[in-house]
Image (tube, rainbow, N blue to C red):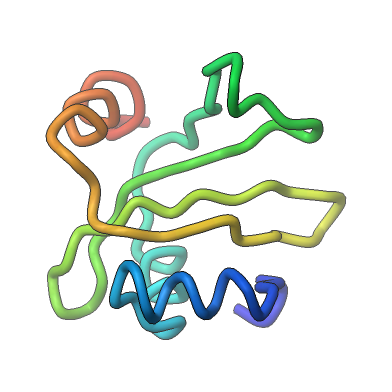
Length: 97
């Protein structure tokens, strides 16, 4: 998936803060099942809207992938291991198509 755009700042945050490799992000996009969810929180609302999903890497690691889509470009905002609340939300609203 070459259409994922990632700033150097986000790449550094993934490596340093979340210990997430870009190959894991690509794997999650490839392994995604279910629906995309939109971040509805007032303080984090963006235009275009922030989208997210939870998927497994090829090594079975769960990651929350957060991005915006501008036309055909996917712009990664972050990726990290989801917390219990995020897992529950995704299970309730996104995990099933």
